[in-house]
Amino acid sequence: MDIKTAVKQLPLTSGVYLMKDASGRIIYIGKAVSLRKRVQSYFRKTAHPISKTDSLVADIRSIDHIVVASEAEALLLEASLIKKYQPKYNVDLRDDKSYPSIMISDEAYPRIAVVRPRSQGKEKILGRLFGPYVDAKLIREALTIIRRIFHYRVCPRMPQKPCLDHHIGLCDAPCVENISVKEYRKVIRHVVCILEGRKDELYKDLHEEMALCVRVKDFERAAVIRDQIRAIGALYSGTKDINYFKEAEQLQRALSLPKAPERIEAFDISNIMGAYAVGSMVSFFNGQPDKKNYRRFRIKDISGADDPAMIAQVVRRRYKRLKDEGALFPDLILIDGGKGQLSAAHQELQKLQITIPLISLAKREEEIFVPQRKRSIVLPKDSLGLKMLQRVRDEAHRFAVSYHRSLRDKSALK
Image (cartoon, rainbow, N blue to C red; front, side, top):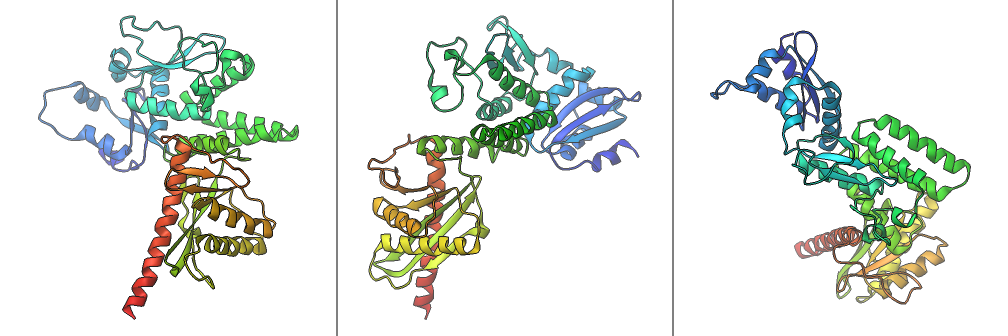
């Protein structure tokens, strides 16, 4: 099979390609969002003068590829393979001063930072380097994601007391020995596994640690590791779902929830002075709409615009049915409204003898109300947890309004 025919058979998925010469030696390694499109670009005829790319193409005799699930994973794998094989046509990557690397410092509690090793001494390099990486923006995004999973320090100097990063769940505060050196180095070892593309080894270590925690009945620690495993899966499958895990962990802390919520169900009511009254329920799983589990309700036997009574009715209908069917309950129920709607929903759950974390979100000040708590919870406007609740609440509102309008339109047509 000639090289151009082989290129046409490459997949259109993300991955890393390895170009080899006649002796089978790897001469160039690159990453791509679409393997086929990227590699095909090398073989297009152009009018430019003879270049390094022309020399590379002339030497290519075969191309291997490794399919990965995301661009971030491709970036990490590319750098790891370049460091391992040192292909001659990647020489610019090794020599160019503009490309950043990741440094893990040589300290008892190592910090992780993006550095430029050949930047004429602007930052002294004292530690282990990974990279360099050709896409500075993507590697910073990947590190942001990794830090949400494994909480390492980034501060150039250890502070005297825990900083904001600790309070928002990004650092375990080694500055006050809140974590032992042994446990912290385990965190760093896990990060290294990701940077070196050793995800199978990482999964194995985490699963073994989780199983040990279960055996000794440390279920809280086991739940943390379980969430780390899921978040790593989200990293390798693309960055879309990973944001949900910071969001979910932040919400768990702010609302004192027993676990980071995976499934959230939200309710809203739509009517005009009680006419065409309907209720909606939307379901989100890991931060994404789960539309097959959306439900809508025609309000029965309630006169006037009594929103709390309507919320009570749809909550009762929803969870009585789940209880009767023996189905799984959500991790969190969100009510669109204030204390009145929240209280009505809470009373119905109590009557059904069902215990599910329940909150309401009031639109005006975006206050969060919790049953049997006088004062509301107000999260910062830029809080990821608040933004997640707003997304879910707004979708419940949209779904309710669309159903209400459809009933009005059908009535007008008649």
